[in-house]
Image (cartoon, rainbow, N blue to C red; front, side):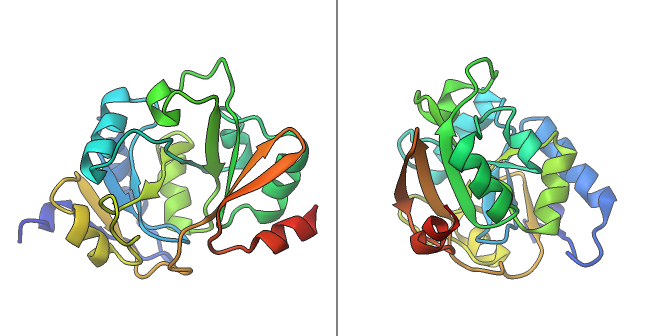
Length: 212
C-alpha cells in the first residue's frame, strides 16, 4: 500500500523511542507529519522552518492564519510566548490539557512571522498525550499543532480520518488510536487583564473563569 512506508503505529502505553527518533528526523529535515494529541490529530512541522510552515498552509488549502504551537512543557512554551499573570495561572492549572492560550509572543524569538500571520500574538499549549509529548520533546520542545484536516473539513479523531484528508500530502503519519476528547482544544486570548473566548472546545469557558 502507498502509505506503508510512512505510517507508524505507536502504542501510547509502550512507546517505541526508535520510531519517535525516526519521526523527529523527518521533522528536522523539513518534513510534515500527522500525529496524535489528546484533542484531535494534528498536522505538525518545525515551527522555525519557514518552508515547512508554508507547506502546512498548502496542505490545509487555506489562507494565511496564525498556527498554534504545541510545547512539551511550560518552559518550552515560554521560549516563544509570554505567560505571565492569568496566562501563567491557567497554564499551570490546565496543562497538559486541551486549552490553547493566545498571548503576546516573545519579541526576540526566531519564530517566523508566517506562524503568527504577522500578528504579535501566538497560541500555545501542552497536550496531554504521551506520544505527542515524546515527539515534541524529540524535535526540540516545540511543534506546529494545527488540526490535520483540509480547510473546512472535520477535525480528525483518528489517523484514518486524517489520512483521508491529508494523507497523500504529508511525509509521515503516526497512529496511536482514537483521540481522547475527539474535539478541538478550547482557545482563549489574553490581552492584559482581558480574557476573550476564541473557540470553545474540550474545556468550557465557565470552567476557565472559575479558576480565575
